[in-house]
Structures are given as structure tokens and as C-alpha cells.
Image (cartoon, rainbow, N blue to C red):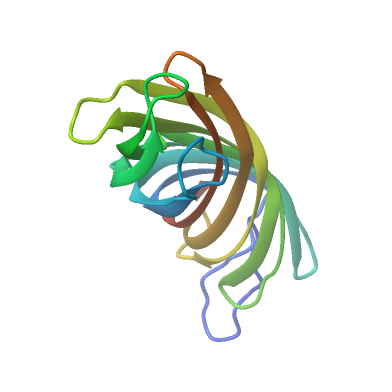
Length: 217
């Protein structure tokens, strides 16, 4: 990415090869967000707040017109430590017609990815930008009678949307630092397990703060 030249520094921010560039990024950060229910048989709506760490990588292509920068990028990440459980929720479990009891219900995400466009305005060594596009990720939910091991695990791979904003700083001609926030909505999906009398619809949204180092080719 080509940032605008600085009037206060002799560091050249503009690459000698021209206004187009490709980038690679190693990134890490923190993810959080609720898995929300609205349709569980015999249960009041619930929300499972998850949070954990994100580790992954990125590649992209950018082009600069004067101070305006536009580009496309994609990233893929491992997500760790997000499994959380809400305990003793009212729940009808183990067979149609079974009496209502209590259950432990958990949620987790283990990977996510995105394909996005972005646009920014470069000044001095800085590039503030906005970004948005398609989000991908998995959503796991766990169900168990209260205090017992998981009796049912449901996992779905989903496609949704994401939007965010960030800031890049050019340390050198080829090394940049980035801080970014993204919100992702992976939508609602429902499922039914007749033997356990589980019918659930789970909506998943996440908020992620990412930091990383970019090498610009």
C-alpha cells in the first residue's frame, strides 16, 4: 500500500514500483459476541456471551489514486477459547412430552474468514479505512441436562456479512502496522433433534479487534 509522503520526514512511503501493491499480514486479536436463541422448545430465549482469541493471516491487493486507496483482501483465522456455557436454563429435554427441566447450553466458534473490499484516505504515514464484505465461520452449540456431559452437539458452517474500520501506519516502505475493528453477522439457523426433543434457532454475531503486521511486496 502506498501512503502519502510526509512533509516532516525523509522516509519514503511511496513504493518505487508504482501505486499498486500486494500485502501479507499476520494478525491476532480478541473476539466476542452472543449466540442468541429464540425458538427452543420449552425454553425461554437465552443469550450465550462468548469471547476468546483470534490468530490468523491475510492477503490483499491495493491501488492508490492520489491519496485515495481502494483494494480487496481476504483473511482466515483460528478462534480459541470461546466455548462458554449458560447453566440451569429452563428446557424440555429427552423426548417429546418429557417434563420441563433444566439444561446447560453452550456456544463456541473455532474458525472464521472473510472476503472484503476496503477504501481509505492516506495522509502522512497513516491510512484510516473502512471495510466490508462476506463473512464465513462456524457456530457450535452444546446441550446437556444440568450438570451432565453434553448430550448433543450441533455445528453449522455459515455465510454472513461483515463491516468494520481500521488504521494502518507505515513503519517503512514495506512494513506496516494495523489495528482494526470488525462486526460480523452470521445469521440465524435452526435445527431439530426429534429423539432429544431439541428444536433450536441460533443467531450468531461477533465483534473482533485485530492487530497485525503487514509486509508489502
